[in-house]
Image 1 (cartoon, rainbow, N blue to C red):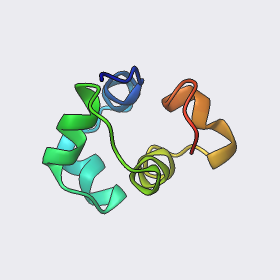
Image 2 (image 1 turned 90 degrees about the vertical axis):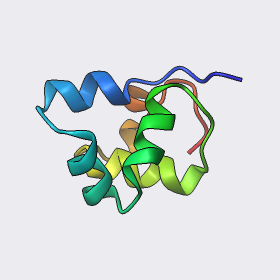
Image 3 (image 1 turned 45 degrees about the vertical axis):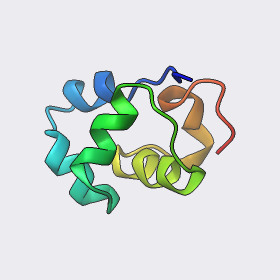
Image 4 (image 1 turned 90 degrees about the horizontal axis):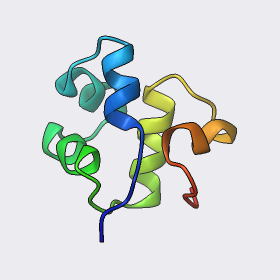
Length: 69
């Protein structure tokens, strides 16, 4: 099941590479690629990405709309 998210859009707006986001989030670039394609991931991974993009966890819906992080 594909999950809609704004990770790629936000990452590109902030002029970040997949590698940079992966490093900041503490995950692999393959994980970032999978998430940007809409594949499922663990809640902890979502939390790491939200924080790495500079958002507070309370702003999770801007990155992962309608998710339960």
